[in-house]
Image (cartoon, rainbow, N blue to C red; front, top):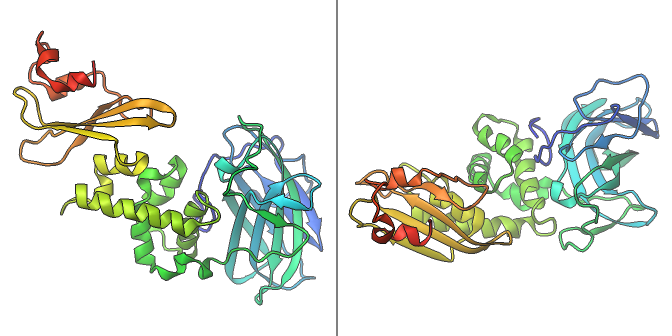
Length: 352
């Protein structure tokens, strides 16, 4: 999600059948759409999200009849009759000035959603954090999985009959970091980021919106562990320190190296085989994972293109999401046409 104020940054853009739905309570009106919207005259059908859609744009018109709005909270829950519902997603906006029109967007935490209908609950608060109005709309999602993630430990129950005061970013672990430190931390998330989270991360040095930066970092970890986002971050920070020691140097951070990125993305390999002195071959290293995402015996080949460097690049792998290079032999071996190569080089014990 790339609007510099927003909450979860998971992009999957949003396709809505005929545009938007509006629902009004206490004079508040909310429009929901698939694209940045202006206030329409007539509302349309319930928004429909196709398989690849997940950015929800909304526009809220604040009437003069209620107190000025300084913050907004959005809670997404399943559309059912139960009073106690599963919290699927939570987002919060805080504004420096009173708002009469709120136009923003949120990105759905894709791993928490399934095919079905969901309620999007909007709560508006004044400067003293008093709730001054609410609104509700329903969205319909089409997803490959039709079973709700109701058993996941990361989904907690909330009572929608009560006013909620769920997350204040300023009261979370994120607040202990300076903006410069957060930018450094966010840059280090690239190895495990989803593609559209990566868009925000790549642009992090050019982003000056402090609230957006703090919200992104919190929501990045909240999306991975809703109950204990700080614990999830600290676990990753330990891995960052490890790859810094193993693969970092004066010119490159550990997580920026190919081996560091793979380590952070898939974890420590089950086996490492380093070959430095085979005649007719550049130095290389093979990582073996006994299991990745239910795929057994996954292998990654790194090689050292420079003779006087310890800088290894990924050359080939068996992983569908990593480099698969049918021509890897021509880069690694002096004579890839040698008929005896499979007897000479250990790499052929892993790659045929």
